[in-house]
Structure formats: structure tokens, C-alpha cells
Image 1: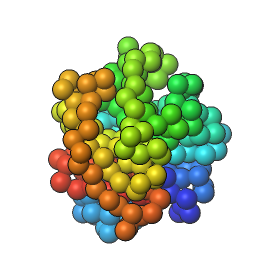
Image 2 (image 1 turned 60 degrees about the vertical axis):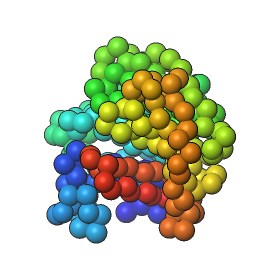
Image 3 (image 1 turned 90 degrees about the horizontal axis):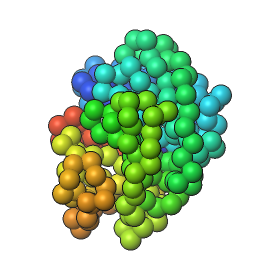
Image 4 (image 1 turned 90 degrees about the vertical axis):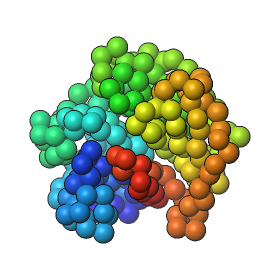
Amino acid sequence: QESSAQDVAFSVDGTKMFVIGYGGDDVNEYTLSTPFDATSASFVDSFSVSSEESTPRGLEFSDDGTKMFVVGNSGNDVNEYTLSTAYDVSTASFVDARSLPEVGDVYGIEFNTDGTKMFVVGTDDAVNEYSLSTAFDVSSETYTDQFSVASEDAGPSDLEFSNDGFTMFVIGFGNDRVYEYDLSTAFDVSTASSTGDELFVGDRESNPWGFEFNDDGTKLFVLG
């Protein structure tokens, strides 16, 4: 379905998997007969995002699956979609886009649990934080702060948080590693510091772009 896979996302229960890339410029949906077991995936459908982004890099959903977000380095913005049926990309429709001039080329996106904060990585080699006055509504974003990860990797491509927001993870294609950071205040990147812990993934993927955890953090998925 995708010759240039860039990011992966799951439904909260792990029975749906989604892959985005710039080979097809679409979001591909799969069902998993065993939750969070990629070997049990079967292709269902795809949704084109080419009208909004011709080089899609990052993908994220709201926890309830009724909102989908796509970023890329063609438009260098975040594109918001609504899904009339949760986690069903065939029901997606474009809502709005928001330019992200602070980031440069935009690669990865993440939200806090309630959707009042958005985080983006790109060619500025930093995690950029935004506050959203309306949850999961990108038109309500305000730029807040950033945290540089350049000392770990000059090519950050995606980011994730633990559920409680006190641990942040960044993957990069510069050194092919996942890096771990502690946050003294949950989901506040200004309080982040490196733990020194890292995971080399270059033996499996020499150009990692996207990654994801299952809901309890006992599985890690890397795509590139």
C-alpha cells in the first residue's frame, strides 16, 4: 500500500493500525485480529491527503478517533480532519490547516491526552509546544515554547509521550535512535532533560521516520 512509509498510529484498543507515506500520499487503514500485533494486520481502506499535503510525514488521532491530523514538509502545516465514524478513514473530511512557521519542514506530531497541547518536530531540531484553547482544534493553537534535541539527533522525525506526560521520546534519522527525556512538569517541554537512555534501531531500520507505543508502553513500533 505504501512504498515510502513515514508514520504509524493505532486506535487506543490496538485493533486498528494506520500508516501514512508520501509514496501514495494517503492514510492506509488496517484491522488487527490480535491487538497491537502487526503480524495480524489486514488492509481495509485508504484516504488520500494529497489535496492538503503532497509530502505527508506525520499522523496522529484524537483518543476517541473522531479527529485525525496530518503534517508534512510540503505545506509545513498541520491538517485537521473529522471522522464521522471513529477510526474509519473512509469517513474522514478535511476541516482546517494551520501553518507552523517555527518548525521549518514539519515531520512529526503528538498531542497531550486531553488535546489541549500539541507538539511538533521538524528541521529546527526541536520539540515545539503549542497550547490549544479548544481541544483538538488546530485553529485555536498558540505557540508556547520549544526544547532543542540537536545534541542528541540533528534529524528528529517523530515524538511520543508516556500517558502521564512525564516521559518524552524522540526518534531521529541522524543517529537511528529513540531518545528518552524526563519532564518535571507533565507535557511541559521547558522542563525536559535527557535521561541519557537511548535505543539503537538502525539494525532494523536505517532511516526511521515514525514510531508508536501501545497504550501501556509495553510495545514499541518503528517504521521507516
